Length: 576
Image (cartoon, rainbow, N blue to C red):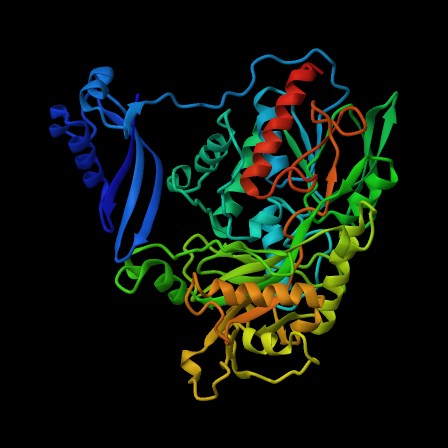
């Protein structure tokens, strides 16, 4: 197999153009017959956009090609972009362990870590039992949408909890910085494609799946797992565990039905894929003596700009209509020593109410697969640590999050608190002063808050309404003073960074940009310690994924779930 890198093609090209360019690079006459002729196959390995020399923007490909006389072709070309290629294909481990399972392996949580752990285990006949405190994805979607329309929050089934995990209601970004030599990353992407995602996610430089597609993929994965011996118990929350000779012996759970039925499940193997918002479970595990430590994370605000503005900044004026909605990645080390960066950037997306506890407001960003709303949004977040938490307690970060969310709830009167950047910037370092900048509010015919638009003026009163930003939210909102949410140090870091980001993205600091808060669930505030076999301080208990502190997104969490499944396969027999 040959790999060909740095294949550049113009905007608007098609598959035939790619094959023709390959033919020219490799100088193979047989390509004249057919792009899929005998002796020639290819697979796109990577597709990215090169916008460094605007307005000349191109797509750049890396392609794997199989054909005859490959060594001769490589030798004759002497092209550094053409070389021998051996793909790394992930293979589920063949050899199983010898320790007898005492019941099914129990997986707590059905986010990407739990799902992929179950997916691997069921392929080897382990018949895992998945406990999920939230609803199945179909029912969960209805509950979340009802909440966004003004309905009651379900503490155990919401944007954070339920089948698919927190990533189900997000942009669904699938890129990861994990160094992967075993092919798990590609395996995760290919598995998503297998269950209904677009093939492009398997090779695009910044793949995303979209919340509307992800919910169907998650359902199909569940169906596959159940067809191959696995089992799901929804609306069932882990409440504790039992041990025997230092090894887990049973998992206690509560069925969140009308009777709140308690159950006990015998097992000597349990996976904690609990997600980054399972605060009550963190507390239970800590009280039961499971070793864990604080983990630094980041908090901040989510900012909205017109997507057209971001497209123009990234692509230039001539090309934006023929390219996908542009994204960005911004970082800054501030003068007061804070690290600030954009997080979970959602092109063509919405800001959503992602709360999971009564009396506390948290937000997130979300995009559908088309990324076709009028606005881009991204969290602008500031790193925080024990100096901000004020304690060395392993759960101090959890309490720090809760206090911010309580304040956000108060500021927004139970709704998403919103403010223009111009007003926020003026208020930072001064006595809070609210000026009502809402000059027009409209709702959709259905009365759904997701279609609500906030129009905000810039500092100049001469700017017309139609030229102002229209805020797009999933959930109701309230104009508030966000400058009173954080400490002066965090506020100053946000202002300095947003102003600086305008050197990269023109008008990023525009005064009518809309801020919302609070972005507090960027990653887990704890790390549950585990050894080289990925077991925690109790044998047979496997902390896993983002909630345990070992992942930072959908793909990395799924990969960690695969790693844990491998350790279980190596230790336990599938005969039970």
